[in-house]
Length: 255
Ligand SMILES: [Zn+2]
Image: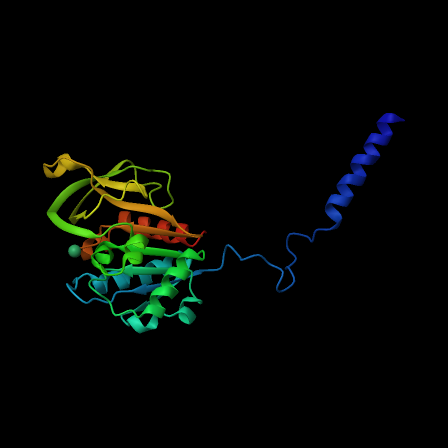
């Protein structure tokens, strides 16, 4: 009797466990689905400049558009128009990407508040290359990026060490990559405040010291990522760079 009772209890438990669930193929009622992992997240990409303008900007745009299409993971809106960044437009995006921006972009106080609130409220920010050579007079922006550009002492082929091979932006890259770039240094080493992902192998440029080149950090409830590479169009077309950007976007968008 004891055995039979146990079997019945298990059967009843199995039935009750299944009774509340729809078959796997049945569509969920509208409005009850969580944010679908398969639905593309939305990226706003700004390439405005008020200083040096990189020749690689068209390549950067083309590459991000192509990545969006090939991955199907995200959509990208590219703009040169600083006034397009407002609280209401940002509400339609998951990640704000500053790519190859330079100088004191003319954001007003409302726009600055909108950008900070966007990220600290749980969305993502990515800065690439001269995004660190942008908005020196707005310290909150420096906090988003993690450090301001200082110099580019080395434009040559060099080795970049992958410090963290488990971050979504670095998985599959191995422990190093060698490429020709304009390698940045920063006014302050961001290492104490961020999670460093890439650093220059100083011996590959005949130097010594600690030179982080890409990093990630939390920003309020949001996430920010910066990558100092991207000076040359060839870098944007490099699958190893694209892999990092796609992974960083996914991470920043919490996908
Ligand atoms: Zn550059």
